[in-house]
Length: 606
Image (cartoon, rainbow, N blue to C red; front, side, top):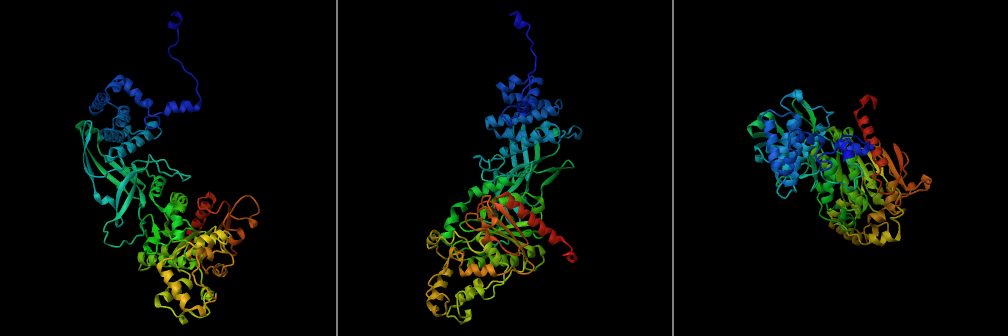
Protein backbone atom coordinates (compact mmCIF):
# COMPACT_ATOMS: atom_id res chain seq x y z
CA UNK A 1 0.00 0.00 0.00
CA UNK A 2 2.83 2.37 0.82
CA UNK A 3 4.54 1.60 -2.52
CA UNK A 4 1.27 2.20 -4.43
CA UNK A 5 0.66 5.45 -2.63
CA UNK A 6 4.10 6.69 -3.67
CA UNK A 7 3.53 5.82 -7.40
CA UNK A 8 3.70 8.62 -9.99
CA UNK A 9 0.12 9.24 -11.32
CA UNK A 10 1.25 11.12 -14.44
CA UNK A 11 3.83 9.98 -16.97
CA UNK A 12 4.73 9.49 -20.58
CA UNK A 13 5.78 6.61 -22.77
CA UNK A 14 7.46 6.79 -26.11
CA UNK A 15 5.51 5.08 -28.90
CA UNK A 16 6.21 4.49 -32.57
CA UNK A 17 5.29 7.26 -35.06
CA UNK A 18 2.22 5.44 -36.39
CA UNK A 19 0.74 4.98 -32.93
CA UNK A 20 1.48 8.60 -32.08
CA UNK A 21 -0.18 9.82 -35.28
CA UNK A 22 -3.26 7.67 -34.70
CA UNK A 23 -3.56 8.99 -31.16
CA UNK A 24 -3.26 12.62 -32.26
CA UNK A 25 -5.56 12.43 -35.31
CA UNK A 26 -8.16 9.87 -34.26
CA UNK A 27 -11.72 11.19 -34.71
CA UNK A 28 -15.28 9.99 -35.21
CA UNK A 29 -14.77 9.60 -38.97
CA UNK A 30 -11.42 7.84 -38.96
CA UNK A 31 -11.71 5.58 -35.94
CA UNK A 32 -15.26 5.85 -34.61
CA UNK A 33 -13.92 7.57 -31.50
CA UNK A 34 -14.27 11.24 -30.61
CA UNK A 35 -11.28 13.44 -31.32
CA UNK A 36 -9.11 14.68 -28.49
CA UNK A 37 -10.46 18.21 -29.15
CA UNK A 38 -14.04 17.11 -28.46
CA UNK A 39 -13.05 15.00 -25.47
CA UNK A 40 -11.42 18.09 -23.99
CA UNK A 41 -14.66 20.07 -24.36
CA UNK A 42 -16.73 17.31 -22.75
CA UNK A 43 -14.36 17.30 -19.77
CA UNK A 44 -14.25 21.11 -19.47
CA UNK A 45 -18.07 21.34 -19.59
CA UNK A 46 -18.46 18.39 -17.20
CA UNK A 47 -20.42 16.46 -19.81
CA UNK A 48 -18.39 13.25 -20.11
CA UNK A 49 -20.71 11.00 -18.14
CA UNK A 50 -23.80 12.86 -19.27
CA UNK A 51 -23.01 12.31 -22.95
CA UNK A 52 -22.52 8.59 -22.26
CA UNK A 53 -25.79 8.24 -20.31
CA UNK A 54 -28.07 10.86 -21.94
CA UNK A 55 -26.47 12.14 -25.17
CA UNK A 56 -29.45 14.25 -26.25
CA UNK A 57 -29.45 16.10 -22.92
CA UNK A 58 -25.70 16.66 -23.12
CA UNK A 59 -26.00 18.02 -26.67
CA UNK A 60 -28.88 20.28 -25.66
CA UNK A 61 -26.85 21.68 -22.75
CA UNK A 62 -23.82 22.36 -24.94
CA UNK A 63 -26.07 23.89 -27.62
CA UNK A 64 -27.55 26.28 -25.06
CA UNK A 65 -24.05 27.35 -24.05
CA UNK A 66 -23.20 28.21 -27.66
CA UNK A 67 -26.58 29.80 -28.48
CA UNK A 68 -26.36 32.06 -25.42
CA UNK A 69 -22.96 33.31 -26.54
CA UNK A 70 -21.15 31.69 -23.63
CA UNK A 71 -19.39 29.11 -25.80
CA UNK A 72 -16.44 29.46 -28.12
CA UNK A 73 -15.30 27.86 -31.35
CA UNK A 74 -14.06 24.79 -29.43
CA UNK A 75 -17.64 24.17 -28.29
CA UNK A 76 -19.01 24.70 -31.80
CA UNK A 77 -16.62 22.13 -33.23
CA UNK A 78 -17.42 19.67 -30.46
CA UNK A 79 -21.14 20.05 -31.22
CA UNK A 80 -20.50 19.16 -34.84
CA UNK A 81 -18.57 15.98 -34.01
CA UNK A 82 -20.85 14.96 -31.15
CA UNK A 83 -24.01 15.48 -33.22
CA UNK A 84 -22.59 13.42 -36.07
CA UNK A 85 -21.56 10.68 -33.64
CA UNK A 86 -25.02 10.52 -32.10
CA UNK A 87 -26.70 10.58 -35.53
CA UNK A 88 -24.65 7.55 -36.53
CA UNK A 89 -25.64 5.75 -33.34
CA UNK A 90 -29.32 6.69 -33.31
CA UNK A 91 -30.08 7.00 -37.02
CA UNK A 92 -31.79 10.35 -36.41
CA UNK A 93 -31.21 12.57 -39.44
CA UNK A 94 -32.07 15.70 -37.47
CA UNK A 95 -28.72 15.32 -35.73
CA UNK A 96 -26.95 14.87 -39.08
CA UNK A 97 -28.37 18.22 -40.20
CA UNK A 98 -27.43 19.76 -36.88
CA UNK A 99 -23.86 18.52 -37.35
CA UNK A 100 -23.80 20.25 -40.76
CA UNK A 101 -25.02 23.52 -39.18
CA UNK A 102 -22.40 23.41 -36.43
CA UNK A 103 -19.58 22.45 -38.83
CA UNK A 104 -20.49 25.40 -41.07
CA UNK A 105 -20.59 27.72 -38.04
CA UNK A 106 -17.10 26.57 -37.08
CA UNK A 107 -15.68 27.00 -40.60
CA UNK A 108 -17.42 30.30 -41.37
CA UNK A 109 -18.13 32.11 -38.09
CA UNK A 110 -20.05 35.39 -38.01
CA UNK A 111 -16.93 36.99 -36.55
CA UNK A 112 -14.21 36.54 -39.17
CA UNK A 113 -11.57 37.12 -36.49
CA UNK A 114 -12.14 33.62 -35.13
CA UNK A 115 -12.03 31.85 -38.50
CA UNK A 116 -10.00 28.64 -37.99
CA UNK A 117 -6.52 28.42 -39.39
CA UNK A 118 -5.99 25.89 -42.20
CA UNK A 119 -3.20 24.52 -39.98
CA UNK A 120 -5.79 23.65 -37.33
CA UNK A 121 -6.43 19.90 -37.61
CA UNK A 122 -10.10 20.59 -36.95
CA UNK A 123 -10.39 22.65 -40.15
CA UNK A 124 -10.28 19.69 -42.55
CA UNK A 125 -12.20 17.50 -40.11
CA UNK A 126 -14.98 20.10 -39.93
CA UNK A 127 -15.17 20.08 -43.75
CA UNK A 128 -15.47 16.29 -43.76
CA UNK A 129 -18.09 16.36 -40.97
CA UNK A 130 -20.11 18.92 -42.94
CA UNK A 131 -19.89 16.89 -46.15
CA UNK A 132 -20.84 13.56 -44.55
CA UNK A 133 -23.50 15.05 -42.30
CA UNK A 134 -25.12 16.91 -45.19
CA UNK A 135 -25.15 13.74 -47.29
CA UNK A 136 -26.73 11.63 -44.58
CA UNK A 137 -29.09 14.38 -43.45
CA UNK A 138 -30.67 14.62 -46.92
CA UNK A 139 -30.76 10.89 -47.69
CA UNK A 140 -34.05 9.24 -48.60
CA UNK A 141 -35.77 6.89 -46.18
CA UNK A 142 -34.17 3.86 -47.81
CA UNK A 143 -30.77 5.62 -47.67
CA UNK A 144 -30.10 4.85 -51.35
CA UNK A 145 -30.30 8.39 -52.73
CA UNK A 146 -30.02 11.97 -51.60
CA UNK A 147 -33.18 14.08 -51.98
CA UNK A 148 -32.59 17.64 -53.09
CA UNK A 149 -35.69 19.72 -52.35
CA UNK A 150 -36.94 22.78 -50.57
CA UNK A 151 -38.77 22.31 -47.30
CA UNK A 152 -38.68 22.49 -43.52
CA UNK A 153 -36.56 19.93 -41.72
CA UNK A 154 -36.52 19.03 -38.04
CA UNK A 155 -33.49 19.95 -35.93
CA UNK A 156 -32.87 18.86 -32.32
CA UNK A 157 -33.15 22.50 -31.26
CA UNK A 158 -35.69 23.86 -33.75
CA UNK A 159 -36.35 23.96 -37.49
CA UNK A 160 -34.29 24.22 -40.65
CA UNK A 161 -35.94 26.06 -43.57
CA UNK A 162 -34.31 25.18 -46.89
CA UNK A 163 -34.75 27.04 -50.17
CA UNK A 164 -33.92 25.27 -53.42
CA UNK A 165 -34.12 26.61 -56.97
CA UNK A 166 -35.17 23.67 -59.14
CA UNK A 167 -33.53 25.35 -62.14
CA UNK A 168 -30.28 24.03 -60.66
CA UNK A 169 -31.41 20.59 -61.80
CA UNK A 170 -31.19 21.67 -65.45
CA UNK A 171 -28.03 20.64 -67.29
CA UNK A 172 -28.12 21.75 -70.89
CA UNK A 173 -31.38 20.36 -72.22
CA UNK A 174 -31.38 17.66 -69.56
CA UNK A 175 -32.55 17.26 -65.98
CA UNK A 176 -30.36 15.83 -63.22
CA UNK A 177 -32.06 13.05 -61.24
CA UNK A 178 -31.26 10.07 -59.04
CA UNK A 179 -28.56 11.50 -56.75
CA UNK A 180 -26.41 8.76 -55.22
CA UNK A 181 -23.77 9.50 -52.54
CA UNK A 182 -20.32 8.36 -53.66
CA UNK A 183 -17.82 9.52 -51.02
CA UNK A 184 -18.25 6.30 -49.05
CA UNK A 185 -17.89 4.00 -52.05
CA UNK A 186 -14.89 1.70 -52.29
CA UNK A 187 -13.65 1.76 -55.87
CA UNK A 188 -12.21 -1.36 -57.49
CA UNK A 189 -10.97 -1.94 -61.02
CA UNK A 190 -9.51 1.54 -61.47
CA UNK A 191 -5.89 1.80 -60.29
CA UNK A 192 -6.13 5.50 -59.40
CA UNK A 193 -8.81 7.43 -57.53
CA UNK A 194 -9.17 11.13 -58.22
CA UNK A 195 -11.15 13.45 -55.97
CA UNK A 196 -11.04 17.15 -55.28
CA UNK A 197 -11.13 17.76 -51.52
CA UNK A 198 -13.37 20.65 -50.60
CA UNK A 199 -16.81 21.44 -49.29
CA UNK A 200 -20.15 19.91 -50.22
CA UNK A 201 -21.78 16.52 -50.60
CA UNK A 202 -20.29 14.70 -53.63
CA UNK A 203 -22.99 12.86 -55.55
CA UNK A 204 -23.42 10.89 -58.79
CA UNK A 205 -26.45 12.01 -60.80
CA UNK A 206 -28.31 10.47 -63.70
CA UNK A 207 -29.80 12.59 -66.46
CA UNK A 208 -33.02 12.59 -68.44
CA UNK A 209 -34.22 14.84 -71.30
CA UNK A 210 -36.24 17.87 -70.28
CA UNK A 211 -38.61 17.06 -73.11
CA UNK A 212 -38.63 13.34 -73.98
CA UNK A 213 -40.60 14.10 -77.16
CA UNK A 214 -37.92 16.41 -78.56
CA UNK A 215 -34.70 14.97 -80.02
CA UNK A 216 -31.64 16.06 -78.05
CA UNK A 217 -28.69 17.80 -79.65
CA UNK A 218 -26.27 16.19 -77.23
CA UNK A 219 -24.84 12.69 -77.37
CA UNK A 220 -25.27 11.76 -73.72
CA UNK A 221 -25.25 7.98 -73.54
CA UNK A 222 -28.05 6.17 -71.67
CA UNK A 223 -27.43 5.49 -67.96
CA UNK A 224 -24.63 8.02 -67.73
CA UNK A 225 -23.84 9.30 -64.24
CA UNK A 226 -22.09 12.61 -63.72
CA UNK A 227 -20.36 14.02 -60.62
CA UNK A 228 -22.27 16.84 -58.92
CA UNK A 229 -21.91 18.60 -55.57
CA UNK A 230 -24.65 19.74 -53.19
CA UNK A 231 -23.95 22.64 -50.86
CA UNK A 232 -26.16 23.92 -48.02
CA UNK A 233 -25.31 27.58 -47.48
CA UNK A 234 -25.98 29.35 -44.18
CA UNK A 235 -25.75 33.03 -43.25
CA UNK A 236 -25.42 34.43 -39.72
CA UNK A 237 -25.41 31.08 -37.98
CA UNK A 238 -24.74 32.44 -34.47
CA UNK A 239 -27.86 34.62 -34.53
CA UNK A 240 -29.96 31.83 -36.01
CA UNK A 241 -28.75 29.30 -33.45
CA UNK A 242 -29.99 31.58 -30.72
CA UNK A 243 -33.38 31.90 -32.43
CA UNK A 244 -33.73 28.14 -32.98
CA UNK A 245 -34.84 28.70 -36.57
CA UNK A 246 -32.17 28.19 -39.23
CA UNK A 247 -32.55 29.37 -42.81
CA UNK A 248 -30.35 27.94 -45.57
CA UNK A 249 -30.11 27.77 -49.35
CA UNK A 250 -29.48 24.41 -51.01
CA UNK A 251 -27.24 24.75 -54.07
CA UNK A 252 -26.34 22.17 -56.71
CA UNK A 253 -23.25 22.40 -58.90
CA UNK A 254 -23.18 20.34 -62.09
CA UNK A 255 -19.99 19.32 -63.96
CA UNK A 256 -19.70 22.46 -66.07
CA UNK A 257 -16.27 23.68 -65.06
CA UNK A 258 -17.38 25.20 -61.72
CA UNK A 259 -14.98 23.89 -59.11
CA UNK A 260 -15.09 26.65 -56.45
CA UNK A 261 -17.70 28.80 -54.74
CA UNK A 262 -17.45 32.08 -52.84
CA UNK A 263 -18.20 31.96 -49.12
CA UNK A 264 -17.54 34.98 -46.94
CA UNK A 265 -15.52 36.60 -49.70
CA UNK A 266 -13.21 33.60 -50.00
CA UNK A 267 -12.95 31.07 -52.82
CA UNK A 268 -13.72 27.61 -51.46
CA UNK A 269 -13.18 24.42 -53.52
CA UNK A 270 -16.09 22.06 -53.98
CA UNK A 271 -15.75 18.42 -53.02
CA UNK A 272 -15.85 16.43 -56.28
CA UNK A 273 -15.65 12.63 -56.59
CA UNK A 274 -15.00 11.98 -60.28
CA UNK A 275 -13.47 8.49 -60.12
CA UNK A 276 -16.08 7.12 -57.73
CA UNK A 277 -18.82 8.46 -60.00
CA UNK A 278 -17.26 6.81 -63.04
CA UNK A 279 -16.94 3.50 -61.20
CA UNK A 280 -20.52 3.71 -59.92
CA UNK A 281 -21.79 4.25 -63.47
CA UNK A 282 -19.78 1.41 -64.98
CA UNK A 283 -20.87 -0.97 -62.22
CA UNK A 284 -24.50 -0.46 -63.30
CA UNK A 285 -23.98 -0.92 -67.04
CA UNK A 286 -24.59 -4.24 -68.83
CA UNK A 287 -21.78 -3.37 -71.25
CA UNK A 288 -19.36 -5.97 -69.86
CA UNK A 289 -21.74 -8.83 -70.66
CA UNK A 290 -22.50 -7.41 -74.10
CA UNK A 291 -18.92 -7.31 -75.39
CA UNK A 292 -18.88 -10.86 -76.75
CA UNK A 293 -22.53 -10.83 -77.80
CA UNK A 294 -21.96 -7.69 -79.84
CA UNK A 295 -19.15 -9.45 -81.67
CA UNK A 296 -21.30 -12.44 -82.54
CA UNK A 297 -24.68 -10.77 -82.99
CA UNK A 298 -25.49 -7.40 -84.53
CA UNK A 299 -28.10 -5.25 -82.81
CA UNK A 300 -29.32 -4.45 -86.30
CA UNK A 301 -31.39 -1.38 -85.44
CA UNK A 302 -28.90 0.84 -83.65
CA UNK A 303 -29.46 4.56 -84.28
CA UNK A 304 -26.64 6.90 -85.28
CA UNK A 305 -26.94 8.86 -82.06
CA UNK A 306 -26.44 5.71 -79.98
CA UNK A 307 -23.25 4.69 -81.75
CA UNK A 308 -21.50 7.89 -80.72
CA UNK A 309 -21.83 8.68 -77.03
CA UNK A 310 -20.52 11.23 -74.56
CA UNK A 311 -20.61 11.70 -70.78
CA UNK A 312 -21.31 15.43 -71.00
CA UNK A 313 -23.23 17.69 -73.37
CA UNK A 314 -21.39 19.21 -76.31
CA UNK A 315 -19.40 22.27 -75.26
CA UNK A 316 -18.37 24.65 -78.06
CA UNK A 317 -14.67 25.43 -78.10
CA UNK A 318 -13.55 22.04 -76.80
CA UNK A 319 -11.78 19.70 -79.23
CA UNK A 320 -13.42 16.27 -79.54
CA UNK A 321 -11.32 13.20 -78.76
CA UNK A 322 -13.07 10.11 -80.12
CA UNK A 323 -12.21 6.71 -78.65
CA UNK A 324 -12.88 3.61 -80.78
CA UNK A 325 -12.70 0.21 -79.03
CA UNK A 326 -11.48 -3.07 -80.48
CA UNK A 327 -12.89 -6.54 -81.18
CA UNK A 328 -15.21 -8.13 -78.58
CA UNK A 329 -14.70 -5.02 -76.48
CA UNK A 330 -16.62 -1.88 -75.53
CA UNK A 331 -16.25 1.79 -74.72
CA UNK A 332 -15.92 0.85 -71.04
CA UNK A 333 -12.38 -0.37 -71.74
CA UNK A 334 -11.31 3.28 -71.96
CA UNK A 335 -12.37 3.91 -68.34
CA UNK A 336 -8.91 4.35 -66.82
CA UNK A 337 -7.80 6.45 -69.79
CA UNK A 338 -10.77 8.75 -69.18
CA UNK A 339 -10.17 8.68 -65.42
CA UNK A 340 -6.68 10.07 -65.93
CA UNK A 341 -7.30 12.53 -68.77
CA UNK A 342 -10.48 14.01 -67.28
CA UNK A 343 -8.62 14.78 -64.07
CA UNK A 344 -5.85 16.70 -65.82
CA UNK A 345 -7.09 20.31 -66.09
CA UNK A 346 -4.78 20.93 -69.06
CA UNK A 347 -6.72 18.26 -70.93
CA UNK A 348 -10.17 18.59 -69.35
CA UNK A 349 -10.43 22.31 -70.04
CA UNK A 350 -9.61 21.99 -73.75
CA UNK A 351 -11.01 18.62 -74.89
CA UNK A 352 -14.32 16.77 -74.80
CA UNK A 353 -14.46 12.97 -74.98
CA UNK A 354 -16.70 10.92 -77.27
CA UNK A 355 -16.95 7.13 -77.54
CA UNK A 356 -17.91 5.10 -80.60
CA UNK A 357 -19.60 1.71 -80.16
CA UNK A 358 -20.19 -0.85 -82.87
CA UNK A 359 -20.83 -4.54 -83.50
CA UNK A 360 -17.28 -5.79 -83.81
CA UNK A 361 -17.97 -8.89 -85.91
CA UNK A 362 -19.22 -6.85 -88.88
CA UNK A 363 -16.95 -6.20 -91.90
CA UNK A 364 -14.47 -3.46 -91.07
CA UNK A 365 -15.48 -1.35 -94.07
CA UNK A 366 -19.09 -1.39 -92.80
CA UNK A 367 -18.11 -0.41 -89.23
CA UNK A 368 -15.80 2.30 -90.61
CA UNK A 369 -18.72 3.65 -92.64
CA UNK A 370 -20.82 3.88 -89.46
CA UNK A 371 -18.02 5.72 -87.66
CA UNK A 372 -17.47 8.09 -90.56
CA UNK A 373 -21.15 8.91 -90.88
CA UNK A 374 -21.65 9.21 -87.12
CA UNK A 375 -18.84 11.76 -86.87
CA UNK A 376 -20.05 13.72 -89.87
CA UNK A 377 -23.59 13.72 -88.53
CA UNK A 378 -22.42 14.94 -85.12
CA UNK A 379 -20.42 17.82 -86.58
CA UNK A 380 -23.34 18.88 -88.77
CA UNK A 381 -25.89 18.57 -85.97
CA UNK A 382 -23.83 20.28 -83.27
CA UNK A 383 -22.43 23.07 -85.44
CA UNK A 384 -24.62 23.49 -88.53
CA UNK A 385 -23.21 26.96 -89.26
CA UNK A 386 -19.56 25.91 -88.91
CA UNK A 387 -18.80 28.48 -86.20
CA UNK A 388 -16.86 26.16 -83.86
CA UNK A 389 -13.32 25.60 -85.16
CA UNK A 390 -12.62 23.12 -82.34
CA UNK A 391 -14.90 20.58 -84.01
CA UNK A 392 -12.62 20.68 -87.05
CA UNK A 393 -9.53 19.73 -85.04
CA UNK A 394 -10.84 16.34 -83.97
CA UNK A 395 -8.55 13.60 -82.62
CA UNK A 396 -9.52 9.94 -83.16
CA UNK A 397 -7.94 7.19 -81.03
CA UNK A 398 -8.45 3.53 -81.97
CA UNK A 399 -7.44 0.34 -80.21
CA UNK A 400 -6.90 -2.90 -82.17
CA UNK A 401 -9.67 -3.20 -84.77
CA UNK A 402 -10.70 0.29 -83.69
CA UNK A 403 -7.34 1.50 -84.99
CA UNK A 404 -8.24 0.16 -88.45
CA UNK A 405 -11.54 2.05 -88.29
CA UNK A 406 -9.58 5.11 -87.21
CA UNK A 407 -7.22 4.89 -90.19
CA UNK A 408 -10.22 4.59 -92.49
CA UNK A 409 -11.22 8.11 -91.43
CA UNK A 410 -8.08 9.65 -92.94
CA UNK A 411 -7.40 7.77 -96.19
CA UNK A 412 -8.44 8.22 -99.80
CA UNK A 413 -9.19 4.78 -101.18
CA UNK A 414 -10.45 5.58 -104.65
CA UNK A 415 -11.74 2.27 -106.06
CA UNK A 416 -9.04 0.13 -104.40
CA UNK A 417 -11.40 -1.70 -102.04
CA UNK A 418 -14.06 -2.12 -104.68
CA UNK A 419 -11.54 -3.55 -107.12
CA UNK A 420 -10.93 -6.35 -104.61
CA UNK A 421 -14.60 -7.30 -104.92
CA UNK A 422 -15.65 -6.75 -108.52
CA UNK A 423 -14.19 -6.60 -112.00
CA UNK A 424 -17.00 -4.24 -113.01
CA UNK A 425 -17.73 -0.69 -111.82
CA UNK A 426 -20.31 -0.44 -109.07
CA UNK A 427 -22.84 1.26 -111.34
CA UNK A 428 -22.61 -1.60 -113.85
CA UNK A 429 -23.81 -4.26 -111.39
CA UNK A 430 -27.36 -5.55 -111.08
CA UNK A 431 -28.24 -4.13 -107.65
CA UNK A 432 -31.17 -2.39 -106.05
CA UNK A 433 -30.75 1.25 -105.09
CA UNK A 434 -30.31 0.57 -101.35
CA UNK A 435 -27.57 -2.02 -101.89
CA UNK A 436 -25.73 0.19 -104.38
CA UNK A 437 -25.82 3.13 -101.97
CA UNK A 438 -24.59 1.01 -99.07
CA UNK A 439 -21.69 -0.38 -101.07
CA UNK A 440 -20.69 3.09 -102.26
CA UNK A 441 -20.68 4.47 -98.70
CA UNK A 442 -18.68 1.52 -97.32
CA UNK A 443 -16.21 0.71 -100.08
CA UNK A 444 -15.15 4.19 -101.20
CA UNK A 445 -13.36 5.98 -98.36
CA UNK A 446 -12.53 9.66 -98.25
CA UNK A 447 -10.67 11.60 -95.54
CA UNK A 448 -12.87 13.42 -93.06
CA UNK A 449 -11.88 17.09 -93.30
CA UNK A 450 -12.44 17.73 -89.59
CA UNK A 451 -10.09 15.00 -88.28
CA UNK A 452 -6.67 16.51 -87.66
CA UNK A 453 -4.87 13.76 -85.75
CA UNK A 454 -5.16 9.99 -85.28
CA UNK A 455 -3.61 7.62 -82.74
CA UNK A 456 -3.27 3.89 -83.36
CA UNK A 457 -3.08 1.70 -80.23
CA UNK A 458 -2.05 -1.97 -80.64
CA UNK A 459 -3.46 -1.89 -84.16
CA UNK A 460 -3.04 -4.86 -86.56
CA UNK A 461 -2.13 -2.71 -89.55
CA UNK A 462 -1.20 -5.85 -91.55
CA UNK A 463 -3.46 -8.26 -89.72
CA UNK A 464 -3.48 -10.29 -86.52
CA UNK A 465 -2.03 -13.78 -86.27
CA UNK A 466 -4.82 -14.63 -83.81
CA UNK A 467 -7.45 -13.55 -86.37
CA UNK A 468 -5.79 -15.88 -88.83
CA UNK A 469 -6.05 -18.94 -86.58
CA UNK A 470 -8.37 -21.88 -87.25
CA UNK A 471 -10.23 -21.31 -83.98
CA UNK A 472 -10.89 -17.64 -84.73
CA UNK A 473 -12.38 -18.53 -88.10
CA UNK A 474 -14.61 -21.16 -86.51
CA UNK A 475 -15.91 -18.58 -84.04
CA UNK A 476 -16.36 -16.05 -86.86
CA UNK A 477 -18.78 -18.46 -88.54
CA UNK A 478 -21.20 -17.73 -85.67
CA UNK A 479 -21.33 -14.00 -86.47
CA UNK A 480 -24.69 -12.69 -87.69
CA UNK A 481 -24.96 -9.47 -89.70
CA UNK A 482 -27.43 -6.59 -89.51
CA UNK A 483 -30.42 -6.68 -91.83
CA UNK A 484 -29.01 -4.27 -94.41
CA UNK A 485 -25.80 -6.33 -94.69
CA UNK A 486 -27.77 -9.57 -95.01
CA UNK A 487 -29.82 -8.09 -97.84
CA UNK A 488 -26.64 -6.82 -99.48
CA UNK A 489 -25.13 -10.31 -99.52
CA UNK A 490 -28.11 -11.83 -101.23
CA UNK A 491 -28.34 -9.01 -103.77
CA UNK A 492 -24.63 -8.93 -104.62
CA UNK A 493 -23.77 -12.63 -104.70
CA UNK A 494 -26.87 -14.10 -106.30
CA UNK A 495 -27.21 -11.62 -109.16
CA UNK A 496 -23.59 -10.70 -109.93
CA UNK A 497 -21.43 -13.85 -109.69
CA UNK A 498 -19.93 -13.19 -113.11
CA UNK A 499 -18.50 -9.86 -111.94
CA UNK A 500 -16.96 -11.00 -108.67
CA UNK A 501 -13.18 -11.18 -108.37
CA UNK A 502 -13.46 -14.20 -106.09
CA UNK A 503 -15.55 -16.64 -108.15
CA UNK A 504 -17.98 -18.66 -106.08
CA UNK A 505 -18.06 -16.19 -103.19
CA UNK A 506 -21.38 -16.54 -101.39
CA UNK A 507 -20.92 -14.71 -98.10
CA UNK A 508 -19.81 -11.40 -96.65
CA UNK A 509 -16.47 -11.51 -94.78
CA UNK A 510 -16.44 -10.86 -91.05
CA UNK A 511 -14.00 -8.55 -89.29
CA UNK A 512 -11.96 -11.64 -88.33
CA UNK A 513 -11.48 -12.51 -91.99
CA UNK A 514 -10.69 -8.87 -92.78
CA UNK A 515 -7.91 -8.92 -90.15
CA UNK A 516 -6.42 -12.23 -91.27
CA UNK A 517 -2.87 -11.57 -92.57
CA UNK A 518 -2.87 -11.61 -96.35
CA UNK A 519 -6.57 -10.78 -96.64
CA UNK A 520 -7.27 -8.43 -99.56
CA UNK A 521 -8.93 -5.83 -97.33
CA UNK A 522 -6.14 -5.55 -94.74
CA UNK A 523 -3.46 -5.56 -97.44
CA UNK A 524 -5.18 -2.70 -99.27
CA UNK A 525 -5.73 -0.61 -96.13
CA UNK A 526 -2.07 -1.06 -95.15
CA UNK A 527 -0.91 0.45 -98.45
CA UNK A 528 -3.07 3.58 -98.17
CA UNK A 529 -1.19 6.58 -96.75
CA UNK A 530 -2.66 8.90 -94.15
CA UNK A 531 -4.03 12.01 -95.85
CA UNK A 532 -1.73 15.07 -96.06
CA UNK A 533 -2.15 17.46 -93.15
CA UNK A 534 -3.22 14.73 -90.71
CA UNK A 535 -0.80 13.83 -87.91
CA UNK A 536 -0.57 10.13 -87.05
CA UNK A 537 0.92 8.39 -84.02
CA UNK A 538 1.39 4.73 -83.14
CA UNK A 539 1.48 3.05 -79.73
CA UNK A 540 2.55 -0.59 -80.03
CA UNK A 541 2.33 -3.17 -77.24
CA UNK A 542 5.02 -5.84 -76.93
CA UNK A 543 5.11 -8.47 -74.20
CA UNK A 544 8.24 -9.40 -72.29
CA UNK A 545 11.74 -7.98 -72.53
CA UNK A 546 12.92 -9.54 -75.78
CA UNK A 547 13.74 -7.72 -79.03
CA UNK A 548 10.89 -5.43 -80.02
CA UNK A 549 11.07 -6.24 -83.73
CA UNK A 550 10.39 -9.94 -83.10
CA UNK A 551 7.85 -9.38 -80.33
CA UNK A 552 4.06 -9.33 -80.08
CA UNK A 553 1.33 -8.44 -77.62
CA UNK A 554 -0.39 -11.81 -77.67
CA UNK A 555 -2.61 -10.79 -80.58
CA UNK A 556 -0.59 -8.58 -82.94
CA UNK A 557 3.03 -8.84 -84.03
CA UNK A 558 5.16 -5.73 -83.77
CA UNK A 559 5.93 -5.93 -87.47
CA UNK A 560 2.18 -5.78 -88.19
CA UNK A 561 1.54 -2.81 -85.91
CA UNK A 562 4.58 -0.84 -87.07
CA UNK A 563 3.79 1.95 -89.55
CA UNK A 564 6.36 3.90 -91.49
CA UNK A 565 6.04 7.65 -91.63
CA UNK A 566 4.03 8.27 -88.46
CA UNK A 567 4.84 11.34 -86.39
CA UNK A 568 5.79 9.18 -83.41
CA UNK A 569 5.92 5.54 -82.31
CA UNK A 570 6.05 4.33 -78.72
CA UNK A 571 6.50 0.71 -77.66
CA UNK A 572 4.96 -0.21 -74.29
CA UNK A 573 5.75 -3.49 -72.58
CA UNK A 574 2.24 -4.82 -72.22
CA UNK A 575 -0.30 -7.30 -73.49
CA UNK A 576 -2.78 -6.38 -76.20
CA UNK A 577 -5.26 -4.63 -73.88
CA UNK A 578 -2.89 -1.78 -73.08
CA UNK A 579 -5.41 1.07 -72.86
CA UNK A 580 -4.95 1.34 -69.09
CA UNK A 581 -1.17 0.96 -69.19
CA UNK A 582 0.30 4.12 -67.60
CA UNK A 583 2.79 4.52 -70.47
CA UNK A 584 -0.03 4.36 -73.02
CA UNK A 585 -2.00 6.99 -71.10
CA UNK A 586 1.01 9.26 -70.70
CA UNK A 587 1.76 9.03 -74.41
CA UNK A 588 -1.80 9.98 -75.33
CA UNK A 589 -1.61 12.84 -72.82
CA UNK A 590 1.61 14.01 -74.48
CA UNK A 591 0.07 13.80 -77.95
CA UNK A 592 -3.03 15.74 -76.89
CA UNK A 593 -0.88 18.49 -75.38
CA UNK A 594 1.13 18.51 -78.61
CA UNK A 595 -2.14 18.84 -80.51
CA UNK A 596 -3.05 21.85 -78.37
CA UNK A 597 0.31 23.48 -79.00
CA UNK A 598 -0.12 23.01 -82.75
CA UNK A 599 -3.69 24.29 -82.57
CA UNK A 600 -2.78 27.37 -80.54
CA UNK A 601 0.33 28.24 -82.56
CA UNK A 602 0.05 31.38 -84.74
CA UNK A 603 -0.71 30.58 -88.37
CA UNK A 604 2.61 32.03 -89.53
CA UNK A 605 4.49 29.71 -87.18
CA UNK A 606 2.84 26.50 -88.34
